[in-house]
Image (cartoon, rainbow, N blue to C red; front, side, top):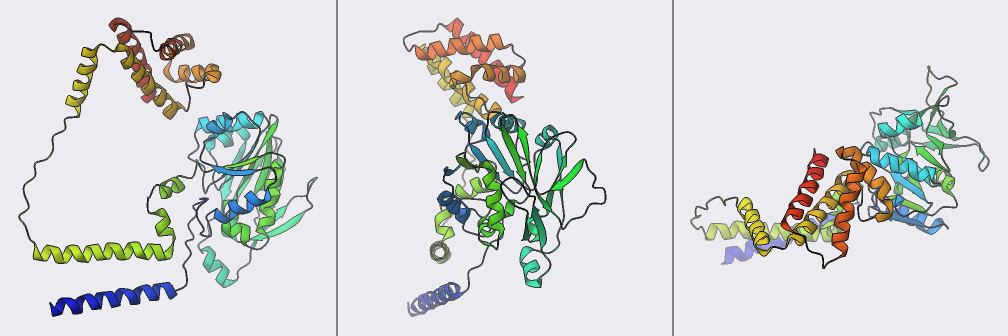
Length: 415
């Protein structure tokens, strides 16, 4: 008993000393780009979003909606997409991006890598430079900064900005013979032997599309907490944002997967605060110590547990039998329709519940499945009438026909 008392006292004193030492140590920054609106680290966007919310008179908000969902709002806006790389954007995203620009919106893409389908459409390419030194090592050595020059336009005069190479290591190669774009900024520190009149190396360009513009910038780390607080980088950032002046601005995080993964943890707030983080760690350590000592005192025979059988198929058959015996064929059709609607929305990003957009929706589904638009329109119209009229009944033959056609479309999409 006396030994246990001394042991507990030692553990408590040791943990108290560790906590005091950790609390007195300087805070360490994490230099990993997340572009999250809740991340207060240098390459998060907590301060960035706060400053823009207070500075932009036309309005500013952060959302997780995709470009397809933003286009569905049917209004002109300025859309800001900031990510380390945007290779994960699909052709559907690019199509909606170009459609929004053609309708009068302005899209600002800030990334070190652009989707190939967008570069093929707008006739540009990207290039990058590799740096062996980290941003911290570069700053400690006091090495020369890159010079990013803002090209004079109708609003701003020519001006030079000094950025670390890690913030300006990507460039756009714009084919001026194929597209009429405005060059906004250049990295004059980089020289290209092959440069000619028809190819321009830039860090930011604006390409007109219909009534709007697509603005491309290759300095994603400048659009972070660090960029908005360091030197005169914020002036360069606001010059780019001014290109969308007069429009309400929306920054979407739909294309930053790391952000979505970080926010899924229920302990994210506790882990973001050092005192609460240590409370969680100490709690786990206490539970671990308790488990170790309890296991030594209470050793029990571990029973042999048989591996549970997979009865999923039996369960499905049982549910199907119950529905069939009940004779509620309409409910079966409605559940299959809900499943089909969700599959189309997830795979093709087409919302069948948006009846005002049926022409485009049927065309996308027809192109994917090979089924004629008239057949798809007739099937969806029948299902909608059945959904709207709760009193209508369905016989077994009609149920099998409708379910079979929906299954055919769904299997073709999944293939």
